[in-house]
Structures are given as C-alpha cells and as structure tokens.
Image 1 (cartoon, rainbow, N blue to C red):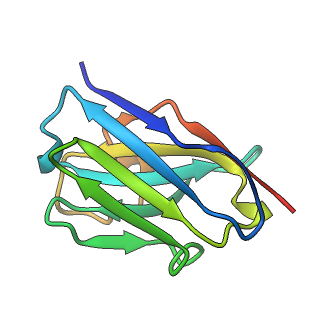
Image 2: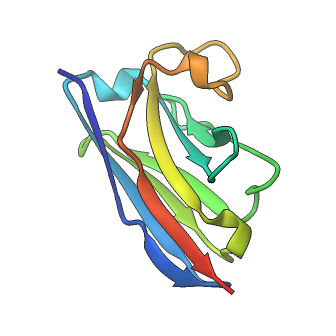
Length: 124
C-alpha cells in the first residue's frame, strides 16, 4: 500500500520560510518523479515543482527562485524549501508521485499517488 505523508506545514509570517517534507512508503521511491502541488480555497490544484529520479527539477514561474525541491532517496523523502513566503502562498500543500520519466510532470493526472496535504498559512 502506497503512502505519502506530508509534514512541516504551519503558520508563518510573510517573508518567512518553511520546509515541507513528504515521506513515501510502499513504492520504489527512487524510480518515481515526485511533485509538489497546492490548492487554495475555491481554486484549482496548482503545480509548484517536480524532481525526476536523476535529480533534475522544474518549477512553476510563480515559485521559481523562492522554492527549492529536493529528494533523499535513502530516506524515501522529498522536500520543499519555501523562502520569502507571501500571503498568497497560503494553501494546502500536497506531494505526489508520478511513475513516468516522460511527460510534463506539471499536470495532476500524471501523478498516481497523493498525500493527504499539509496546511501552510502565511500571515501579512
């Protein structure tokens, strides 16, 4: 049974930082592209970043330069370091696993497995 468990969310002031973690189990973690998405109330789920198994990464323009995705295959964990946080970054943040190395990795339908989400709230 595949499980993705996010942690590290919370309340932070604007300009602050948080590091989210996503621990995976039940899958061959190193073979998967891992992604981070977020969803604010009343909005669609939004792609943020993805890291392929070789370590290469892609980012949404909205977070490029502020967020950094990384992975530790020995710990079956993917991270999202978020700096210079803004109130508009407030959302539930999800990690997801994509079994393919092709595709855009930016679409929700490309991901087979999802975590339950962790809330990030940025106060102004």
